[in-house]
Amino acid sequence: MGWWSRGAAGRGGFGGAALLVPGTGLVFRMLPMLRVFSVAFWAFIGITSPVFFLGALVIWLVTLPFDRRRVVLHLYSSAWATCYVYLNPLWRLKVRGRDRLPWRGSAVLVANHASLVDILVLFGLFRPFKWVSKREIFKIPVIGWNMRLNDYVPLVRGSGASVRRMMEHCDRLLAAGAPVMIFPEGQRSQDGTLRAFKNGAFDLAVRHKVPVFPIAVHGTGRALPKHGLVLREPADMRIEVLPPLDPAGFADTDALRDATRQAISTALSAGK
Image (cartoon, rainbow, N blue to C red; front, side, top):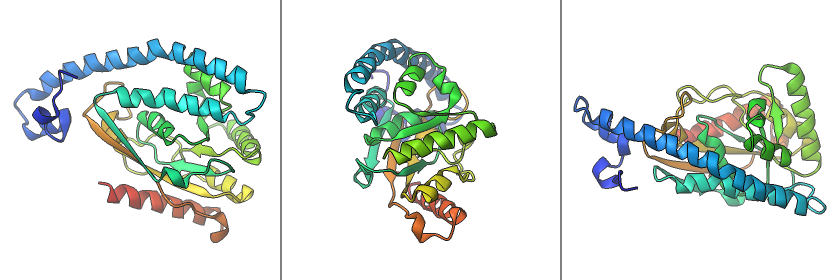
């Protein structure tokens, strides 16, 4: 942490300092350090993940006979993921409204998606749920293996057959009392603007008669934009769990979808 001073950089951190004094060359001195730090950070994840995975494998074997929903394994995975958030000196994370999420019972959790970091910070909810994630992530050694141990749900974007399998998998999970977590935009936003929501998550909620929990994720796009793996400016990130929406209170799936998007959009606007 010695190479970065909040006082010297100002409230905006590296990005803010560079923007406040354009043309001084400051950004050119900062970027090499950010690149070096980014390499070190991703290397740290790569080196430590196999160790965490061994722990996950032990927990899976020990708890499999009595923890069919794999809640203990998911909470361990949550600790694994969020340790990288809290150990990163560029990032700060706050979680609001966590108590709204159920420990037991089915639900559909939906969040906006602006950055790869969203996945790490949403693990910070420390509540049981099953991720719906693109299949490419499941192919990553160690990380993908842990996702399969957790019975998370793979999806091939743009494949109708994969979407059907994903919905069937989510049907089984919801029927067993496991919440599912979905990014209804379908992919990360290019510029942080909230994209249109797809219907899948809301169709699940309507058919299973379970609540939808809108979740607003703030600040992750500043930490790591969509393209590239070089970390950017220091980021104050925040997860905001909003009041649940009961499908019974809406005329149809479209109305539930639109109300959920509006709730997240309003929270994001208020948080700027």
